[in-house]
Image (tube, rainbow, N blue to C red; front, top):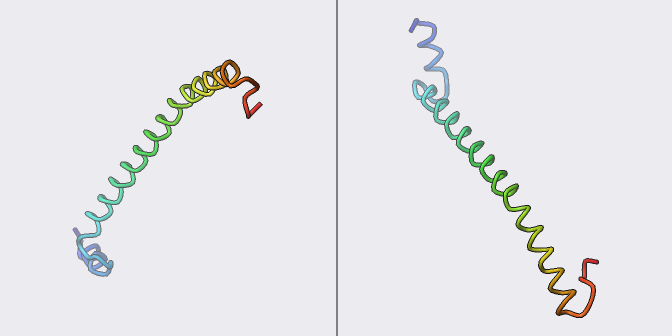
Length: 72
């Protein structure tokens, strides 16, 4: 580390902890992105089940409810 870079570190608001804080922020950001991708995958995985459930409900209403489903 040169004298100029040591002076730059002392001028930053967190001093020599800045690289550690930058690393921590990068790790947290990547974990949040991974969690967002997992949630998107879960949502996409549940859509077909919701469609099947809606179809079964519509069939039940037509058969036992005596008419056309409310959503038409």
